[in-house]
Image 1 (cartoon, one colour):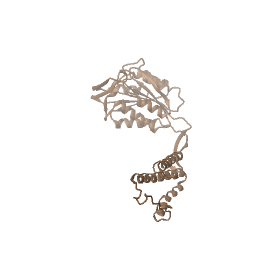
Image 2 (spheres, one colour):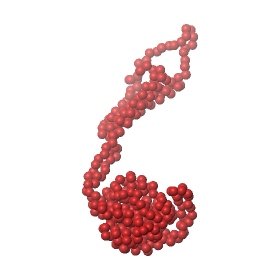
Image 3 (cartoon, helix red, strand yellow):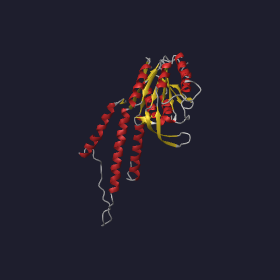
Image 4 (spheres, one colour):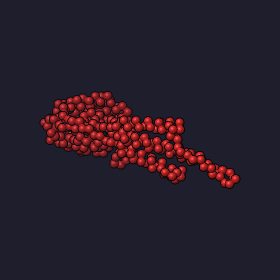
Amino acid sequence: MVEFESPGAFILLLLVPVVYILRHIKVLSRITFALNMSDWNGANFSWDGRARKAFSIFVKILCIIFYVCLVIACASPVYHQQQKVYSSRGASIIFVVDVSPSMAARDIGELHRIEAAKNAIHSLALKNDGSEFGLVEMAETACLVIPPTMDRKVFFDRLDAMSVGELGDGTAIGNGLSMAIYHLENSPSEKKAVVLITDGENNAGSVHPNTAARLAKSKDISLYILGIGTRGVVPLDYVDSKTNRVYSGYLESNFDPTSLAKLAAECDGRFFETGSIVSLSQAISTIGKNESVMQSYHIKNNDTFYYQYFLLAAAIFASLAWIIRRIFLKEVL
């Protein structure tokens, strides 16, 4: 929120119309001396004063802007921003996101599956600013791209850069879950959770998904599985991040939530079938509520002052007005 530390300084702006009125009624009129310039018994000296008049008006405008900037600087504008500083830990959540080519299917509203997943993750991370979030990408293999962090900028930058096809074709669910569990098991957070977002069955990797699910349960890590996608023929298009080749066509989507539901039941987790934006939002909202943690915090006030910028602007306008009067108007100041 922008405020002014000395708002009373704006009263000085009233001097502008006051000076104008006093000059108009000849109270503050300039002292002038009549001077006739002409040849002996010849015509009076004359010149085209249109350019001079235009420069004179421009100088007056610059002077008014200079004065307004000076008054604003005297009022000392400041931007107040409040920030929560947490003194206790929130939840630790790692998203395991399927980046196989099928996630480029466009059947979640008008969005690709991968884009809908990104939006859902954004929503949860923004609403739970006291929690830390990490990201695992999963396809033919799995890799950790962001460890659990509270730095939202770093997290969102990497999340936005995520694209399908980065890790080949296939769905290594067991590898993805194991990777997330490994980076959560030693976390001191009160609540720890893995959120798997995928549209397919496990068909790659060296770790069986049930083994990873039981491992999560033994480490007291909650598991949420979001089965994203619909059934039938759906449009698909994406650009391969390695070859820059454009793929476009239709996908015969045989999305079957049965195996994912059984996987969630293996560790007393939760399964959500998210075939629309509404169902996806509801699932994310439920996860946020379940993994919320009461945290202690204090408010830190961050103030940013801007008076120096208006002083600089005032100096620039004043210098410009002075240069025009000296060089173009030939005035002696």
